[in-house]
Image 1 (spheres, rainbow, N blue to C red):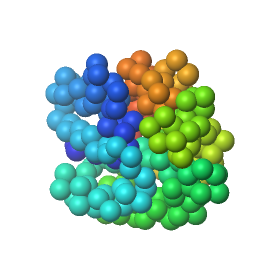
Image 2 (cartoon, helix red, strand yellow):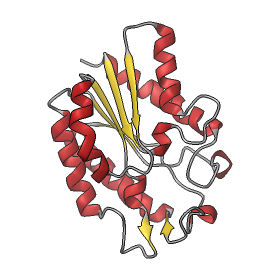
Image 3 (tube, rainbow, N blue to C red):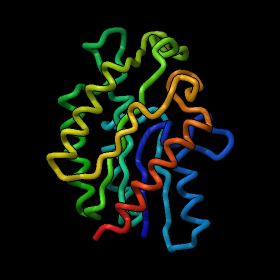
Length: 199
């Protein structure tokens, strides 16, 4: 089974110098078990759902995806200066998610969404590397709630990790330390294994 995980810098494993992030930990887990599972970490730094739509079909097709994980939405919720100026509006985000699922179903019905995680607002309003860009938890929750509602309506697996991480798990207010990635890995391991075995 080929598992493809699509996401952003948290999926990619930014700042986890120990094991490369939660998706890489999941890849190692399956490799060690030698069960014929190939896991591809397709997280790309700074990606939004707009960015993901541009590359999804080609990348999923090239890897013959049989189980697809979407970990997207945090960067969509990021806003420039004011909350009414998000990188991707809620309406556009919903349309993008709908289109991603439509494309994903060409490959598989095993589709899983992961919620965004909370941030440490003392470090993300604004973010230190770009002083006009902000992340806040109230706004992130709007995108998480939309994802949850969408997955319930479409009968897709939704993994809610919004409140999983504490502020001490976050390196820069956004990206997890290794222990934060480990927490996500433990949750995702069980969720992916359950979806993997479901007929």
